[in-house]
Amino acid sequence: MSPSRRRAELRMDQPLDRGRIRGPSYDPEQWGRLSERIARFIGSWRFIAWMTVVIVAWLLWNIFAPEDLKPDPYPFIFLTLLLSLQASYAAPLILLAQNRQSDRDKVQYLEDREMTDRLVADTEYLAREIAALRVALGEVATRDYLRAELRDLADEIAERLTDEQRSRTQGDGPSIGA
Image 1 (cartoon, rainbow, N blue to C red):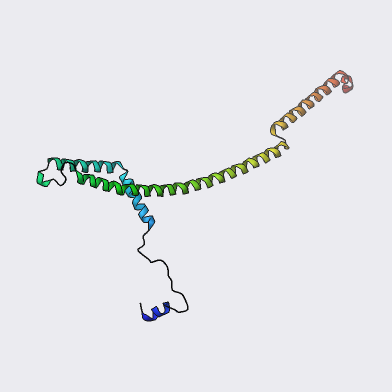
Image 2: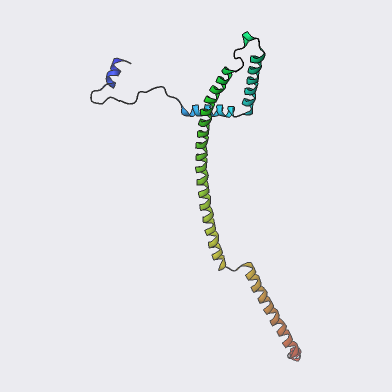
């Protein structure tokens, strides 16, 4: 840093910035993704198969190899240590992955709840609109009502015509021809 720039930063009329000591920073999201990938692998059948192959090979080598080439003889203390070390790292990684999944589930739950609230509001609005339409349609003539009225009118006209024809044929018959 140049001396003139440094002098500009150290002004006497402004207090110094006394914040926390800045250490190395990391991206928690990136570490979270890594922990999820590791936890996903540890929880897979592929990992179990590989772990089984390695343990069986370790046991077979330490049982059947010549004495001077056995790194871990019978009580297999080093194998136990390695498995404990693997478990001690796997447990926190799995917990990290579960925490991230529960955070995602919580966000999804809140989004689903908002969607449900909107759907309920829309459904209630539509129910009110349908009720209003039913009330309005109660005052409007329906097709069945019109058909019944037209049928009644047609029957009434037919009766009048038959009555008129009967009255003409009974009493007015000679006067029509005259």
